[in-house]
Image (cartoon, rainbow, N blue to C red; front, side):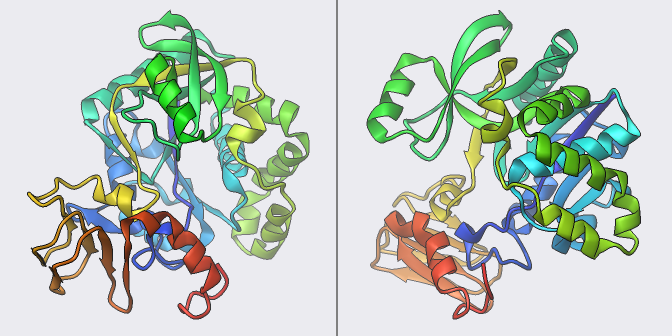
Length: 358
């Protein structure tokens, strides 16, 4: 049976001041009154039944996630005791899923991307599910055809073609410098690494056993005792989880495996990892201002990004190239070129900003 797992655990510190430890970016309502998590769930409608849809998130966000997704069974919401990166989030979900359906096909999606149009996304997912049926011992990922020489994404190099928009992955590449990214774009052989996957649950668990054995054994034990720990042994689970080596699924598995396939996902795909990226999702006005706010008035203003969830009036007069983000208790103003540094700002001044230790 086909199951979908949505990863929704990151705090999103790059999107401060709207994103906070108590309300991460996947719960922000910046796109037509819908949260990124709700949009991620809606993209899966018609592809996966609600009963076969799972969300792995921070234990701190479980109640908020349940409120966002009332059609997803509560038992399908997995609360990580702490953040140990994507290899462990996926490994825990795979182990829990395997205890319910030992021969499941598991599709892994993110909750911090904007992907459209829906029809092309769905076609790529169906293609990947078919590829997993035809190649049950393979790990299938999605590659996004690059629109620019982006230096903030990892890349996949396309190998031999196996079918319609289906290829072997010849190589994983880390985030490149601009010159290298321009060469990747010109070659036509490279794709952005989407961080989304499809595989048999037995295949990914086997890969974890081979390539990350210590974590795999601990994750298996965590899953075996998960229900009991959730009913009163949370401290024990948290201690066990803290012992896991913190590592991403790409470093732990995908870059080392020799059975990786790629489905081309021919979609608009936007990783919302900064306020500039969020601004790129809006249609700019005649002066290049990107407005994602109910009430904003740019006057003699150019190339600004303005974001707010409230009806507080924001007036930008005679300024250009700024990011202005309004929250009820804080406002961020910075040049666009500093938007990638917001995470460092938050980490450096967390206590002053009332965020504790980030």
